[in-house]
Length: 404
Image (tube, rainbow, N blue to C red; front, top):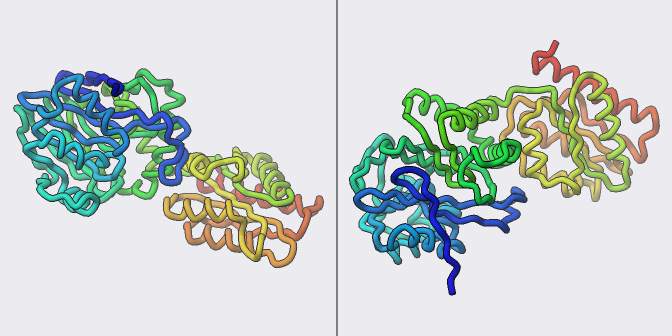
């Protein structure tokens, strides 16, 4: 017998009919240790409108929740706010099952759905357009590159409710559907991690969207993202908007992330000495060894920092694999306003630290000095060079963070 799932009422006209993924631990390279949700919403007017679907393996859960409200065949319209497969994966099967009268997406969403699923017959809605569907008005706001070109949001004036697709979301599996029901420390951590690992490259675009939404002055009681809890009430939404402004600005702080890996402990000794120098000069260091820390957790720490120092031993005439993994991942995230340095230990050729410096240059991180490259095991004099590097970074950090 199939498991039965219940919808959750969100507002007068809206039910949450999504799926909870308790087991996911990797979301294309980003660790999701608290799982995730794939949120979909059923709007009940004179007819039923489905907002987004869920990842393909969770289609039965979606359909079961819909069936707790109405026969799925009663769905007359489907709106696809975002075509990424965690939100559209079950869409072709759902369309086949319910045979809606119309399916709507943004102009680029129409093209993406054609590309993903080779489907046609999806109608496009444009930025600023409104439609009356089932006796309710829906308005559409294109949000290109937040975080895909096809992304859009849908506003339901009758309930003062915004369906925000991946905006204002987070990966968090929980039975609680609303933000004010979840521990705020968890919301801060998962919201920060989500922004850092997914939205950081689009920070300038997001800043423009935030300004536009604020200018539109939409009455908002609920903001319903496609991942994580629903923001309930103006104060809750104001809180996450405030965090988005902070994360977009990436204003330097006195926090300094020191991340590294090590073979026989020499690069680790360098990292700890750099930590001492940073702390002595007023910075707040966070030290993360890469074989003990996932890349996405390093990135989360960097979002609130003003400095990034990266250390690598040299192995086979190149940098250490875990360090290469982090830097390749971070390069695409386009962090701004960071100072930093490269360091490492070597036995023969010393390419590791120099290659790290090359990555930092590509990432437009201001390096306060040449790479600190020490041969074999650092002695007291060498460790003092490391402390001096930490002090130099902290001194520059005070300047850029306005602490002098």
